[in-house]
Length: 343
Image (cartoon, rainbow, N blue to C red; front, side):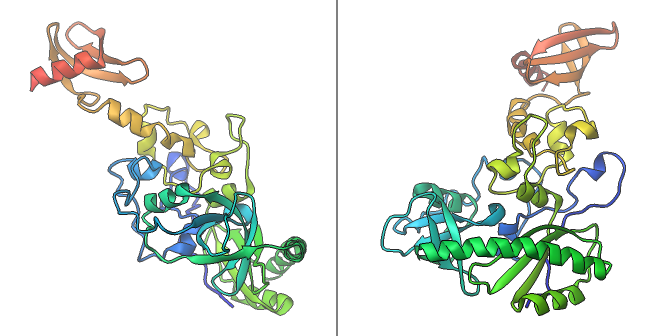
């Protein structure tokens, strides 16, 4: 029975303005919490967005020491995933349900990715060469029925959890319940505004389910990933639809794209900065490379001016001449040439 909860909790303090939207601490997804410890993980340096958006694979230059292994990625309830070695003796296909080794006992999951894509994902996350558990066999009909029974127990467990947390006066919001296939562990994922002493609650739950109980406090982004939502674009939120890893988003990513720093427009369904702010951030950073920053003094044939705005989408730099008050525009290529001459 475990009474530990994740060190990687979300910051949900009440702060007015934009600071309330920004991640104070680097958030890890549930699968990352299981794979890494706090001493093993180093968050992004913040000097670029490559590691944040995954455009530059971490450890991508490592030799593929797993090239001879048959690896698969397995998906579990609510988007939790993991990498496993296929030792079934046959070829696995996406969508198949399989029995595999867990931390303690066995579990059942669905094959989500096969082939070289799995190895590429592991290299991009710096996991190449790290140990993996094994897929034992394809699940049979009796095992699939047991999985359905477990789902019913999970639904009942949500009601039991809420009743007992209220009895103990604990301010906790239950997000998800996951019952390991062999029923050796039941995990409750919850959010809270601060750390919660739930030891007495764990004892109560253990007396009901007679198995190992785990309570995990997750962040707002993980909650959105598990529950799912519709974004302002009208589509399912990216974290739930296709993102396998949750990334840190900061106001610097918004500023690099000259986005309006409006909390209502920058916030996603989770109440944090939208993940999609990351998607074009590196492009903007690359485009302004070699250009003087905003408010820099530049000398042209028309005199001394100051850069007022850089519009990447229109490929224009707005230059203000204080002596005349004239606002002029130059292409980014022209501005790079002038900047080189000034230096």
